[in-house]
Amino acid sequence: MSAAPAPALWSTAEEAFLMERRQRPAEQLWEQTCGLVSEGDGLLWKAFSLRRCIETDLMPRQEKAECALRHGRRQLVELQRFLPSVAFLHFRQKCAAWYDLLQLFEELVVHGLLKDAVDCALRSGELTEPSRWRKSNQWPAISNLLQLQLHLCCTVGGIIAGGEASPNRMNGETRAVFRHLAALWADRQARLFTGDFLDCYYTLRDVLHGWGSGWCSRVLCVDGEEDSSSSVSCRVPQSVPGPRICSFPAWDSLSAVDRLTSYSTVCPHHLTEDVVQCLETLVVTHFADVWRSIELVVGSAST
Image 1 (cartoon, rainbow, N blue to C red):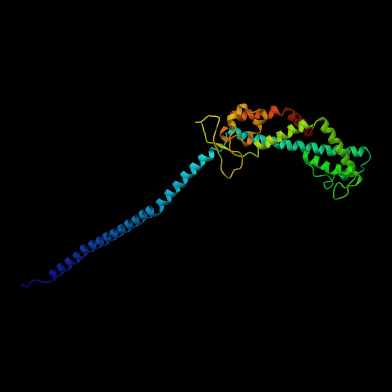
Image 2 (image 1 turned 60 degrees about the vertical axis):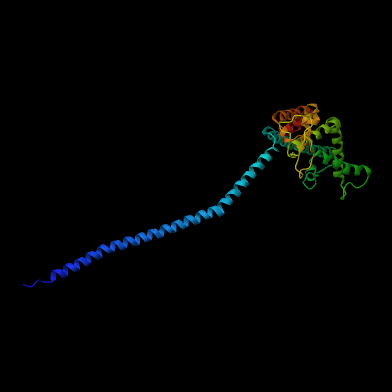
């Protein structure tokens, strides 16, 4: 009997097929492993590049930023030494508002005198059309007492001397108005705006401007709280003009006027709440007569 070869051939084919099936996952696994290794190398390279970028670029920039921040903080601390107390900043705002009130007071006085001068010229028959004379192009540009005084010196002085009061010859009505204006101003000076009153008034105006919108830090004491001696060394930036000696050590011996006018000699370090309270009280009490006149004029205009 002869054996049939077919089954052996089928067995060999099956074995080959099975071997191929077993080798294919191994090759795929190897390819996947190689891919993971390659991807891992790429990630390691990216991490190395990122670390190098941080060390060579970002860290120096961070150090520069931190250095600039420290420098800015030091400058801020230095600038804070130039700043006065919060109480003084409020007092400064009050002084600026009071200064505006004085400007309003002068405008009301001048406009009232101009109106009264026109009325006087109208009653005397020297003026026939007051509405036309009061037009904006006829009304003189006077808004404060100093301008009024200078305007009268130029116009009325020229009229009395018989010369020309202005480049354009004034007509009779305008001359009459200015004559009445000069008479009214002279009467007001005799009764209210005396030399003593004006001296006190302009001192108040200088004080309010000095402590208000005109104030700036001109002097800085470097003694701090360690040295309380009468000889205080002071330092001021070279670009800031003004005195270099703080007058606060002699504060107790200063007069009321000297304290009020010390806006350019007291350093911000000594503008404490107590000093500000003293200054605010002096502004009200030392110029009490001036404030009464201001309240009278402004109050009558608002009613």
